[in-house]
Image (cartoon, rainbow, N blue to C red; front, side, top):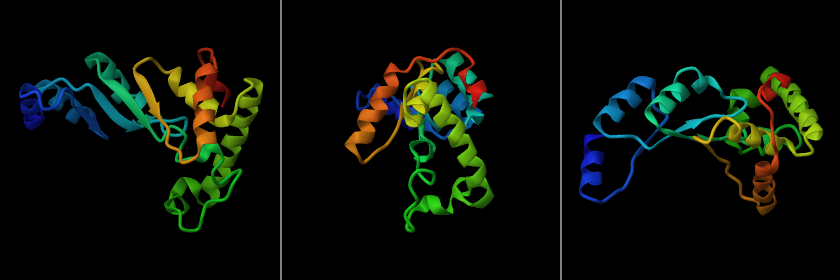
Length: 168
């Protein structure tokens, strides 16, 4: 962080951030130079950062960049509506295997039912939930298809009420 601070002072970079950092690392780095953003996996599936990381980021004024907000494509229907390609790394991911996948398919079905009630798609609902977590949470869904990009943008129109996730 000291070297990044030097680059800021020299005008070579304007801001710096961290990825996949622990609470201790965030505190130590921020003490050397303000961190502007922290990139972490965050989705309806992966919420462990809510306990310590998000409160710390909010205390320090650090934005949260949520990668894999659609659960590696799961909330877009991967392994549920469409099968995983044999060469996909996801085929080896525990969430997409055996009993875990069967349990996760039930979660997807509940999300799909809620999406229907909200007149949107499951990925739109999953992204809307993240957007509902606060102005300091920015999801970065990845896609290779324009139709998915358009669908993701539609999440901005979905309005949720507090406590929505209790329905999942």
